[in-house]
Image (cartoon, rainbow, N blue to C red; front, side):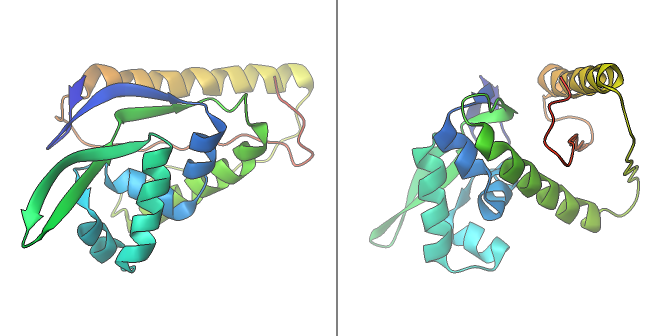
Length: 184
């Protein structure tokens, strides 16, 4: 178990259940998950940060909580009410969509939009490429395997060095064919 800035969470959660994958495929829920990576937040704090009504944020928090992607990490009394603070169930989510392949395009698109929002706010240091290439099956498989290894290396570095020190780096990997052919 690892410690976030203000709560404990598992190191890794393999997100593979269809309910979990569908929950992550929503842009707003993906943003909430990203925000909770920094520290726990209340519904009120999230609503202010996202500039949305508390009811809207509360609905999405329930979906994420029911999918076991977030949980209440602490509460506090505010007048006669109990305020809940939500945090992620794990520091790092690994996605496996074999049980729900229909969720992959939507989930990928949502993650790319979230990454695009982050990139647009970056001050400097963005290195990117968008490349289209014709590949035979063998080359497509080789490239897909190399990208998988790179993602694994990036995740391993987070697990190994995830003590809260160092700068945060983001990495986006999307690899597809317009006709839906599997590169592997």
